[in-house]
Amino acid sequence: MATVYVKPGVCGLNTKITAKKKDLDEDSYIIELHIESESDNIKRLAEVLTEVDGMEEVFTNFAKSGIYKLGSQCGLHVACPVPSGIIKAIEVECGLALPKDVEMTITRD
Image (cartoon, rainbow, N blue to C red; front, side, top):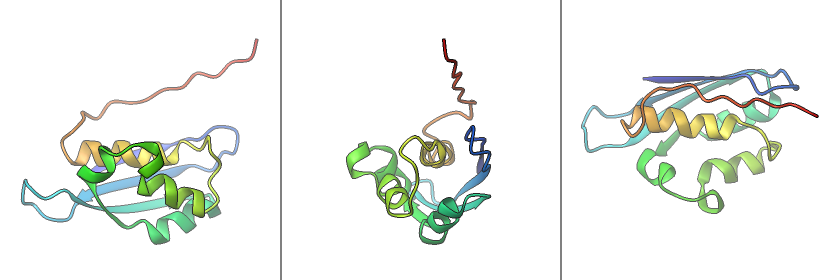
């Protein structure tokens, strides 16, 4: 199981994402998602985004991403880092990436 914690910044509405392979078969990439958040929009997303084909989702582009499409329908702000966190959790659970923290440093000069 892969877990990603997202602290999205100024909104302060933290999210926990867990991704787990549905089947132990190494050729299966169906991923079950469990998303907990303080954000009402992410809670709406969590209700409809419970399972994905990990290989399909990881290797698609932004315009075709089911995760980004659902996020848009659920009212997520375009800069929300949660969809990216979901995809990172899927990558790790599918064995396509190592668990490594991602960091953004935002300053204003």
